[in-house]
Picture 1 (spheres, rainbow, N blue to C red):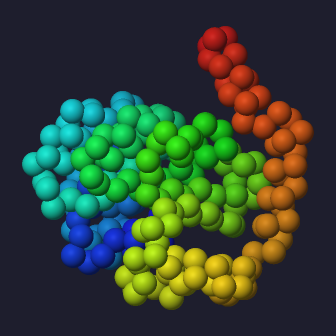
Picture 2 (picture 1 turned 45 degrees about the vertical axis):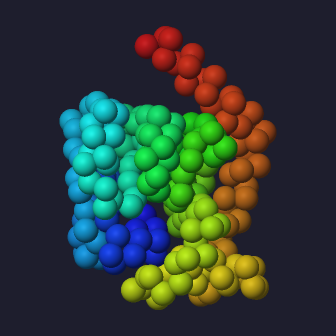
Length: 209
């Protein structure tokens, strides 16, 4: 998430952060450290966001360029309404950034129906592997405009994307053992039925509860 915020948002742009837990607050800390101007919309940790309040905030703050949210906030496990927020943000011509660390691989995310500019997830959690590998999915048209925005060498998404495009390699030492562990975990996940099976198990468990 730090690589997204510091690589994809220019210093003269403004970010709205939706907060209902520790990881939303962490995004705010990252933005403050990066000196990115922010607006905060916070609610209780056990409830989801008020869509009307998000719409009102964006309409009243026309200088906001990006909205950032956590899909599944690990603090309480609350699943925020990604599809609805994404469509709202898109309708008001803003860009959406999503922390999907705890949801990717466990909860369906339709990138056709859900407009997202950038989304982060990791090798552990829903993909059932070991920690140590992060993924960032970015709209290609946006990453192309981000040269020179990052003030970090290691976390510069534009430079890493450019390296992947030219050589297919990491810029620095790759986490080979984590990649191998993830490859094995994905094989196991597929044999177990993949995401569809996971959702069926979750639904049956919820009925029991």
